[in-house]
Length: 111
Image (cartoon, rainbow, N blue to C red; front, side, top):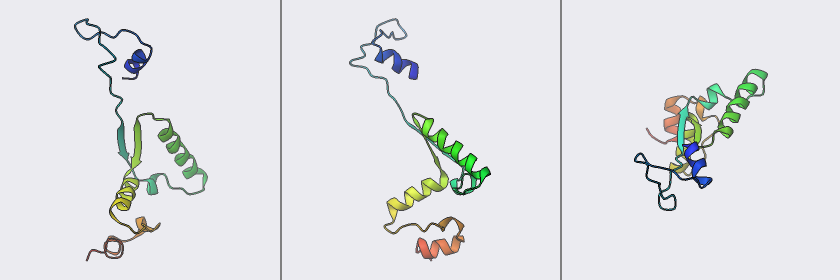
């Protein structure tokens, strides 16, 4: 995909499977974005200042920044985003350590 985009940007002729030249003004190659949902930020890459977690967290952030068309999101980050879309109140910072029943009753207000 990246090679195809490079060819188009350099104004080279691109042929289809039959050898016919593709009109790049009318036909465009998509540049899709993907989302990779992995792990748990709070457990695997916590923002805790000690050497082991610090190195792991920094490496994770570098990988996220360096991927061009792939957004890397952890499950807990996805939940936090969804919570902010659905609810007006702010999610407490200690939400992750709360018991399920306590979270449901005090945060989600479900009995």
